[in-house]
Amino acid sequence: MNLPVNPSIFRKHFPAFAENDLKGWAFFENAGGAYMCQQVIDRYNHYFTAHKLQPYGQYPASKEAGAEMDDGHDSMARLLNVHVDWIHFGPSTTANTYTLAHAFGQVLNAGDAIIVTNQDHEANTGAVRRMAAEKGLEVREWQVNPATGSLEFSAFENLLDDKVKLITFPHASNIVGEINPVAEICAAAKKVGAKTIVDGVAYAPHSMPDLTALGADIYLFSTYKTFGPHQGLMAIDPELAKALPNQGHFFNDGILRKRLVPAGPDHAQIAASAGIAAYFDDIAKDLNIAAPNNGERNLFNALRDQETALLTPLIDYLKSSNKVRLVGTDNLDARVPTISIICEKPGLELARDLADHKIMAAGGHFYVYRLMEGMDVDPNHGVLRTSFVHYTEEAEIQQLISALDQVL
Picture 1 (cartoon, rainbow, N blue to C red):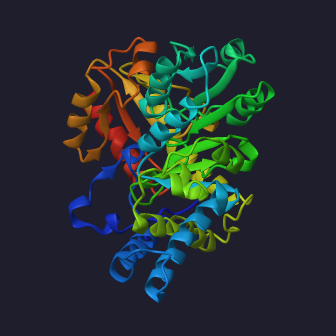
Picture 2: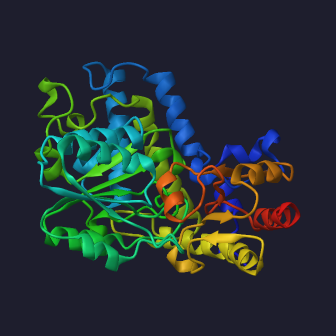
């Protein structure tokens, strides 16, 4: 394997790789949460040290605190290629989705239809389904192909008409790993006047999305899976954010950032999120690639190339094995490196066996219970999930393959 980039260029920015207790261990649970980069840690520590007070006040330290939080908003808007008014930070993606479901529940009426999928993480569908049941909405489920776990666009088209007002779906499944055609889905939704909520939690760690190009009305992901602090980011079309009912305090109705975030997110984490953009800027400089600035995506394309090179031998190994079933496509260009397999052993047991070989992986149903059932997999048996990002080393891939060979 010849990697396009030496992983040391990335790994030097992550203190976890220097931890003695983690040395020798190969980290394959990035889909559950990535390591935090130094740029985020520095901003987090600085905020707690210098600015653990109320921001946006009248004295210097408070003004500086607010400016650092503004930098968090501005930086994420730049990465996502949207105006800063799109950016909303909340406690988590699950909490953000719950709030959105409640807001939509106040404007949708009996007789309206929504489309959900059985490929979604439950956080992106459960609250919406409950809202639909309470409001008497028609729920149309876009179901995966049971054999592949894929969401086929033709099946979506069969569900779509002008009764549909809201569509929720994942950019990529946290189990199947296949990248869904977001731009195509959103364009079709707009033709019938439906709004779209896209769960990007499993996609964003691999390539920050260009939201202007995708055309989604709402895009959600968790910054702790994109090398940052544990919080959720909602990117919402400002016109839609203004049109949805205020979910915050009545006297904050005119403040866009506060209308859909009833529980104030951690100030330090918002400020620290600017470190995510700083990390990408730093590695872009190291690689002599243009920094990600609005529509400039060359860095993220390079990171995807790195991941594809790492993924190739693992997919080849799994395809050659008669002991496992690979979930999702083996087309490297059509998926992210979140790899799930099914075998005779339950996923949790297999993860326990891999830990004996210093492999950090996980097993279970990963909050996609409906997907498990849709693919005729017992959720209690589950899958083994291994996931990595661009900072993974070739030796770690080989360590995983060797360990799988021994435990299967």
